[in-house]
Image 1: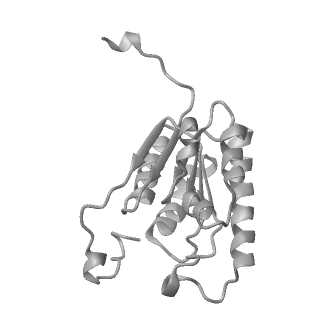
Image 2: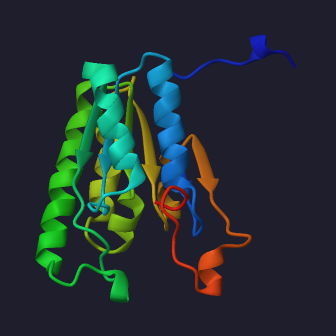
Length: 189
C-alpha cells in the first residue's frame, strides 16, 4: 500500500485522556506544531486558573503570533479534590466559570476563524459535573468543518469516541507523587 491510497481530512478531533501526566503538555506541543504551520489556534483552558508554566509561555508568545493565537483561561481551580480544592469557591461559581469557558470554546469552534481549538481539562469539567455531556456533544456537532478540535483531561466519555479521529490514553507507569513527592514546577505544572 502506498500513500496514494490514503486521503486527508480537512479537520480532525483529538483527545488526550488518562490518569497520567502529559495531557496538557501534549496539547501545548500540538499548539506549537499548529502555530509553526501558520495555523490560527484558540487555547481554552478549563480548571486551571493559578499561575502555571504554560500560562507564562502562552503570554510570552502571544505578541509573536498576534492574531493567530487566542488564549482564554476560564477555570476556577481544582474542584472537589479534597485539600487541593479551592475552598473559597462555591460549586455554583465553578459551574458558572465552566459554562462561560464552554461558551468561549463553542464560539471558537463554530466560527471557522480558528484552524485548531484546544479545550484543556474539559474532560475533567464534564466528569466532575461542571459541564454536561450534552455541552460536550455540542462542541462536536457545532464544529466548523475545517476546524480541528483537541480535548484534554481525565475521564473522556467513551460514548463520544465515535466523534474522535485520534485518541491517546496517558497511562502511568510510575510517578513520584505516589512516593509522597509534590509536583515539580517546570515539569508537572
